Image (tube, one colour):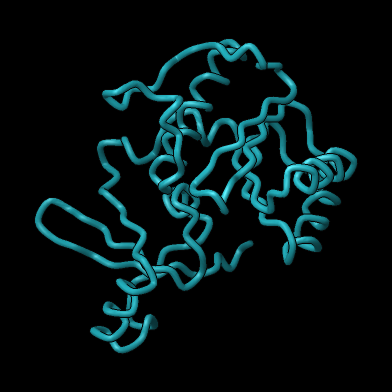
Length: 196
């Protein structure tokens, strides 16, 4: 698969993911909700960016990188985030981020929020897989009703924050997913992956 085809498939999945998170991605889809598969004239193999709005106050920066992200590239991303006044970024990478860059992301996590996906993770939309049931990330109000019913989240089955579906919806520790199967409804509480 060529780099451009991989990029277009990844871009489509990212936009579908952001649409599922209630961001405004209408300009990238036709009136029937189908992705408009057009080559963006700004595409470059090493760096491509999107700025997507959820509302007037909430925007996200999506960056696609083929080069390995080290501390220098991370610092330039932070400068870019400051310049456009955005605190949340999604990085789509072809290579693992260096350990120094990972440490720096942890160090600046009180000011900036980074989500990192490999390009391979985003080639296909996990929510469209036939064996993956529908997952709905509950609002705080909906989650409170479930907790009131069960008593404590301790009694709910768990899902790791590193699970692909959890990452897709940006589930955070303590959030609750409602899982719709053919004949039943399940709930899972997001917990930290002990291996990470």
